[in-house]
Amino acid sequence: MLIYYFIAALLAYLFIKRRFYLSKIKSIPSTKSLPILGHTFILLAGSKSIGRFIKTIQKECKRICIVWFGLIPYIVVYNAEDIQTILRNSKEIPKGQSYNFLKPWLGESILISDGQKFRQNKKILVQTFHKSNLLDFLPIFNNNAENLIQNFAKHVGKGEFAADLYLATGAMFNLLGTTLGVHRDILTEEEAFNYSLSVEKMGEFLYTRHIKFWLKPDIFFYFSNLKKRQDHHLNILNNLTDRVILGKKKEFDERKSSSVTKFDKNNNVLFLENFFSATKLNGEGFTLKEIKDEVMTMMFAGQDTTTVTLGFSLSLLGIHQEVQDKLYKELEEILGLSDRDINYEDIQKMVYLGQVIKETWRLFPPINGFMRVPIKDINLGQYIFPKGTPLLCSLFLLHRNEDYYPNSNRFIPERFNSENDKTRPPYSFLPFSEGVRKCIGSNYAMLVVKVFLAKILRRYKVICNQKQKDFKLSLQLTVRRKEGFLISLDPRK
Ligand code: HEM
Image (cartoon, rainbow, N blue to C red; front, side, top):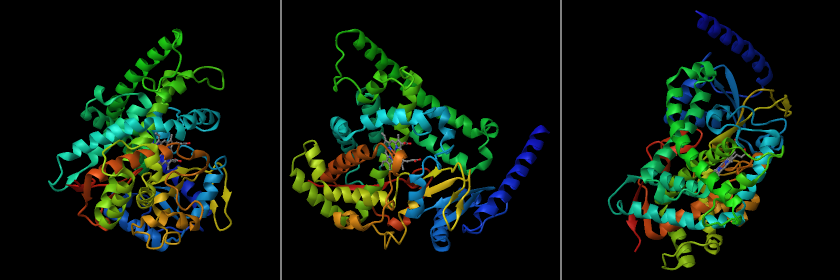
């Protein structure tokens, strides 16, 4: 009985709140929605209906739109000027509680926290991911790319296959190697893939809790099937990470008490070392739980994003053979016929490859969008972002805005050559966001993707038989192809 009273009270509260919101957001356009469910039924109905919904938004709402998640309005923003205002006002428009559902997994890590804790941890991470340190990761990336090529070999000349498993495992080994120092020999490919699958699932659960608004309150979530599935995947993630961090901390303490205090990049992991030796603002060291939260955050933020970048790049190159030919020529000029590892000088010369990757990020931004919540009413002249209303910055829609990208659905890497770069308005290309909450992994991602694509394309010609318009897109937290990254391979030599 009590539960019915609770639900009735909750609905009454949401209705009153809805009326309050409506008075403030009436100048912002929306599309047709149902009375209580809002647009939720469309968002749950699958990729075709979401695709149609996106087209309706583009047609009916030029620069901004309300999408109702049940009784809660989310203001979807996809014009460069408003996104600039949002990202430049991080104090008045913080992340709010957008990632709070991930707290059981990521604790108070950099992705979730605000204020002093955020600034202190971000400083350490930005130093760790500085370009000069990333170069030490190149042997790991080269080695993992070589393993991927060997795994691909069994599909050469044998028709279409889904590359997802191989790409996800490669991305996982990269992250495990660079943040935890876990090498391929202590983990099977299957274990690495299962770990990456659990990371992917956690992102899916975060999205589901936002869409299925009835699962938002912890009390309903706690008794749901989703919670059981979340616990299962959390277990997989915790087991490996706990084991590795404990081992590395022991090694660090032993080294500290002996005379060998020097960092040795062949045996120690810079990411962990920086946290083991850093002190917090209160003068204390980081606890193992705090370090683990940051490690998990790197896995979450870096795994799916690099996997889908590789998947979409290969799919698009497989469709646009003329782009692949031009790219192959660039790679031949830089690397000749040798199979040697790729070094930093090579990376710097891979200019056209950089344009291909950026155009892939434009069409299929790995992070579909991100949320902010104003702590006070923000007056933008034409309209208000009311205090407490979620703002959803849609990178997918921003990157397909015809004002910034004519023929926006077409794959044209030359949009990102140095000349065209100058003509694009600020904040119109934001795969990594911008400002104080900008991604720390942008250089890391570019490096990984360049090494992997260069190695794959030198060895194989990639073919994709689907058309871009036929991709069944899953537009959750990350953008993916529902049918998998289907490609086929022919040998180059
Ligand atoms: C193609 C690859 C990647 C893309 C497109 C991407 C994109 C993004 C975006 C859009 C955000 C902002 C999210 C928000 O504001 O809510 C973000 C944040 C973040 N990313 Fe990435 N990311 C990528 C790879 C990586 C990698 C490889 C790492 C680390 C290994 C990483 C670590 C982070 C972290 C820690 C944050 C939170 C930053 C903060 O809150 O200040 N990302 N990423």
